[in-house]
Length: 283
Ligand SMILES: NC(=O)c1ccc[n+]([C@@H]2O[C@H](COP(=O)([O-])OP(=O)(O)OC[C@H]3O[C@@H](n4cnc5c(N)ncnc54)[C@H](OP(=O)(O)O)[C@@H]3O)[C@@H](O)[C@H]2O)c1
Image (cartoon, rainbow, N blue to C red; front, side):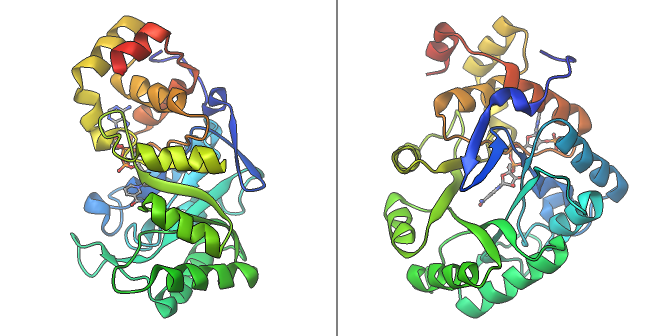
């Protein structure tokens, strides 16, 4: 698998509301600086990486206002605006960064309205294709946060709504308030604790977007992943992504990298097929 130029299109497609994307997306969090704080060391290289990601068939990009903060969205617009046909950008709001290592929830309606307007401005859009509520805020009724976003959708600022870091119960509540097209939760071969949320997405026919699809690198150290990778002449990252793609038809992984070599390697995972015996090893 290494070296061959294969694109994310080989993963097949998935519907996100009325939009169709290749089932292997790109997580654009790491185009911001170290610790996802401030500017990257080499901004032109990050612009190039984003352009290359689209060329490699990743036509769903995931970002958030809190990445930088504000850096990832800004670089996406610098690299790709005016956006090529077919590119779907999903962003998120509801977390704030008071300092380098803090990611605080802020689900207050006034914050969400401001955050959405900021994302629209940075992404140079009049409407965001997928706006995801980043994380429930325990200090604010979930219904108030979701209701605010549903109102913004009715006002035309959001095409589709998604949620992130939710339980099955919160997903059900969100779906009573608005039409939800996706859930973004942590999930990878080493951490399957959100299997019930994935099952709820399958039942509802909505996209499940696993964050940390490579376990932020940890999944690559798993002995069974390494064993299958050796057997298939693939890399542990490719096996981890192929496992996710095989796990469910609603799975839309968003691996993140700031390395061109890893980007190409990850895109090629879309063409990797795991046999029943590979899947049994990884079970
Ligand atoms: N909703 C949420 O709360 C939430 C939270 C976290 C992340 N996210 C989203 O999920 C996306 C993915 O998360 P993530 O980037 O943190 O984790 P990830 O995709 O699981 O792993 C990324 C890490 O793996 C390394 N990596 C990537 N490809 C590799 C390869 N082929 N070989 C070896 N190492 C490789 C990267 O390093 P290199 O840069 O060196 O390749 C990086 O350290 C983010 O971009 C973001 O959009 C959402």
